[in-house]
Length: 379
Ligand SMILES: [Zn+2]
Ligand SMILES: [Zn+2]
Ligand SMILES: [Zn+2]
Image 1 (cartoon, helix red, strand yellow):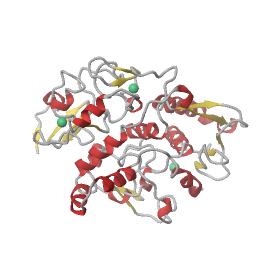
Image 2 (cartoon, protein in one colour):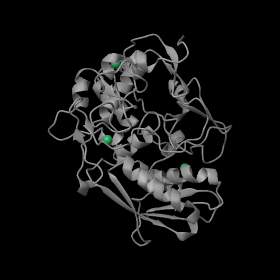
Image 3 (cartoon, helix red, strand yellow):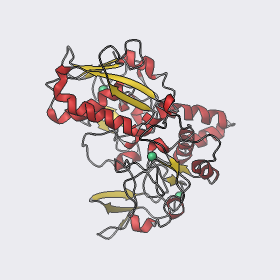
Image 4 (cartoon, protein in one colour):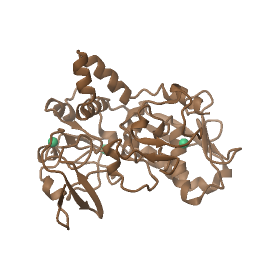
């Protein structure tokens, strides 16, 4: 049923990495300029993130309400399903998943005829989505599989099926789950490639990381499977489902930084860069906002637009970056993890330069963020 999903995946109305390529082609006049620019990763990141933050906040009536029916036969999954519905609703205020009866559901969850867990169709397809959950599935995998399958039901595909996947992974198998049968099965990436996505399969002999393929792998030291939605999964959800004001989500512009913040405790997830002194909330008056709050309000010149004028953009971590090399590369420890900094501000992750960091947190100090209990190793 992969084909059924792909047919609808193309209609997702979000800005994708593919659209950025199209935009770049239109913007750059000469073929020399195109060749230069398209190989410049920082320039590409800048264009990508600028285009990504140009959606407008919606109203409650614009919210996408999706009924979910859960069959009794998958009772061992009930706790995980309830939590996944809650997690998706919190991450993306443009979606309202709610449990309902079988007649009104656009997503049905039940036991499949075959072994394994899989999803047929997507919620907005003619027959809705059917999520098959295997009751004999390993207990350790039920949580992430529930999130993974529900994201399929919302129209998301595997991360390694992107058009540009060969830059990031080696597929060493003929298994149909990995191998594309033609271009029609390759999907546009909504965000940059994301090794932390819950839509990745675990790394093993069938699919190995391409260590020299992209610097992004350095952010993920081990091959631990991804158990939760990643930061970029949440960004992608908010690109597809426009964030909408509702009871639990009513963002306001913060007084100190002029950024849109919702104040919810949603900033302690994966891959967030939080300087010492900030709490786990989206604002309300400092540091990065959550992926849902990276939207525009009609008639107001937002901080991200002012930053674009200064040549800065809001990257993967939600922090502003300028892409300039400002210090020497180093490795450092934070919260028990060994990290690397290449000395460049962004382009999409890591502690920014002081100038960019202070756009969101006046006391920000780069040297404080990369200090270690051990002496810093200069590479
Ligand atoms: Zn899958
Ligand atoms: Zn927020
Ligand atoms: Zn900077």
